[in-house]
Length: 557
Image 1 (cartoon, rainbow, N blue to C red):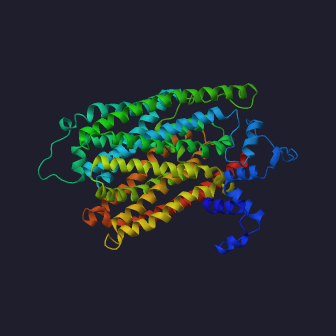
Image 2: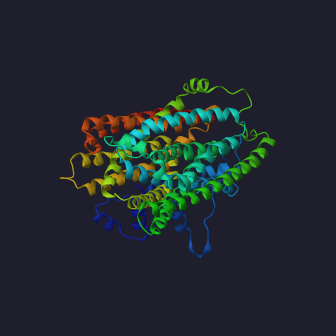
Image 3: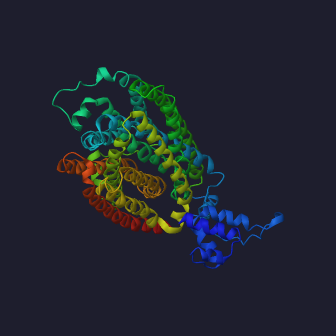
């Protein structure tokens, strides 16, 4: 839609005749209607139109009469003006430092996620095969995710300071990545189990290469604990609801540059390898570990900076009686146990709908990713080649997400929460159907390279729509909820919910692989049916949550 609108804008700006456009088979509306449609769909073009309409010679149009707008409690007049602004960057000057710091923090979180995702896939797929991933996610990642939730809930009861909880959750991941790069991988031949006769299969490969499996588990936990839990918990703590509508879609503009940078850095480091053997790959892991350490330090500094700015702003508002002082502490009352929290949070319709959305998204990703990676392994058998491809893939994801993110704010503002949230499942389904069909008919009718291209495109669309639309819509729904829902409820939904969705997809694949005789490529038709069922549940949850979000927004007004 955005590309179509941009084309029409160029046609009209260059002064091409309507007959020329008609010769292309395009329906031509009156000029003012076209510009209205274009600027409504794309706020960036609205700014350009405004500049083109400015008279030459420096003259400016007469400003319209000032319109009085109501200011909500706890919201400055400047923020209200920015909220009413439909331009692509509705951030005021006073808000920009906090916005920039949060955007850079998101960049670092996504950079680490992209790096460890590409590395874990390289280690496991190259040594154990793509069929091993469902086993590892079901029997390794899911139990560890449950332990993580229990530990995180215990820590939230022990530490009254949210900053302490943040650091205690963050730092162990980087300690492990450093240990793996400098100790475990260099000594892999000594630490890994020796192969035994008569013991083959994906499960035994995972046990034999246990350090690679451990790296995969840690990286999967980071995928749920990094951006979804740590970053967005911080963002929800320091951002007001009125700010979130403007901030959240734009956070990812900078954040989605991370896959591009990660892909470039990874490709450059891989290119420095003198050879493609395991020893050279180990040196690459050390370089990447040093980059992760630097990113971790940057996250800690930015987290402290963001909270300092939020404390200063909220203390001013509290002195004027508009808002309480920041959430430096989780709670001052006696904190409920994990079981009590789960019982209480399960009564929330908002959390149930968000959990359904997260579970279905991750189940859909699992159903397509493993099949896609099985095709990748046939194409790239060497670790360095596989990692180089994943680096290029990350760059494509980053560039595409960055472009879509420029339009995300306008999409959410103009089409509303409901339609913005539905774009992700509908676009994923539109690309998943041809992907499953191309694999199902076999490489005799459709070459494997074509199926790989379709699968890669589907994975790109799945990720960019999640980063640009799914995450901002979901996270904005957390803000009106209570502190328990923001801490324990969010941890349960984003960590346990995502792992549950992956486990459902993994269990389904394991069952189908056993029926199909050991090859996941033969399971494409059944996987496609399961995929569409998950999409239906997802869309139903979006419909339910949209009513709650709109009702809550109306009440707050």
